[in-house]
Structures are given as structure tokens and as C-alpha cells.
Amino acid sequence: MALDGGIPKEMWIGKKVNYSFLRVFGCEAFAHVDKEDRKKLDAKSQKCYLVGYGVNDLGYKLWDVDNHKIIRS
Image (tube, rainbow, N blue to C red; front, side, top):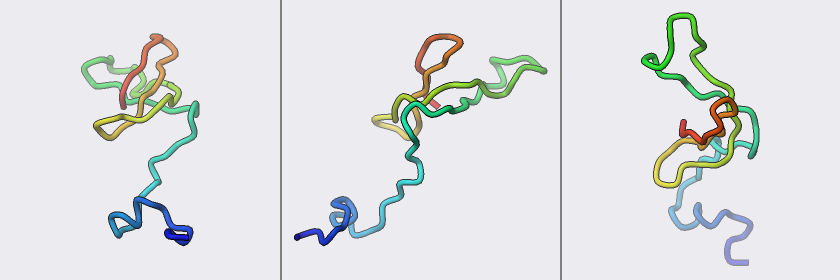
């Protein structure tokens, strides 16, 4: 076999690829709420669920259960 059990991207660029950012689809996640969008005693994060990954930038696409919308974090 040409790759000998290796990962194609590792063979192409010649370095180990970092997969530590990968998470299970649909897992529980918490998105940061900006300081301008909260009051003094409000929570600093909101509960969401992972629905995907950013295409052109780093980050996660999260489903905000309370507001029924997708946010990037």
C-alpha cells in the first residue's frame, strides 16, 4: 500500500496533523457571551449544541437552544 497506514494529509505536508479540536456532533457546548451583551449577574456562557465546524476560519458552529439560531464560537 502506498500510504502504509498513514494519513494522507500527514504524508502530503510531512508533519503530524493535530486533531484535538474535533468533537462529537451534537455534544453539549458552551458559547461565551460578550460583556456588552450581558449584565453584571448574568451568566458568561450559554448552553448550545455542536452542529459543525467553521469553513474558512477556526471555530465551531453551535445551535443556541434558547434563541433558535446558529452561532459561531
